[in-house]
Image (cartoon, rainbow, N blue to C red):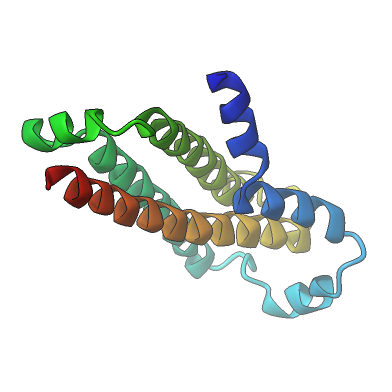
Length: 155
């Protein structure tokens, strides 16, 4: 039951939709013309620092996941009474996996920059950054739900 729910949460998510659409639409996308003009990775110092934006957002997302998972003792006892707590933990685990994935593909262009086409890696970087932004919103909504549950069960 939990494995099936994990698979459903992993495959039916905005993050997975981003990955699939990025893979499917890149070769024929009109974004390639726009990406040619952007030239984020043109070999300057700015490109090395730009990669830190999604990395720092990813680390903030991971910190938020940890904060939502490890509550103080009084709040933890309240949240453990929630019948859907196991679902919440699965959502946090999936968010953690996606956050690590998007951080990796954001760093990927910097690691292999010299040997490859910059349009391709700019596209990968943008997918990683947009993925981290989507995760930021998803985790924020999960924290709001957690607060609602805490208030509901505290009464």
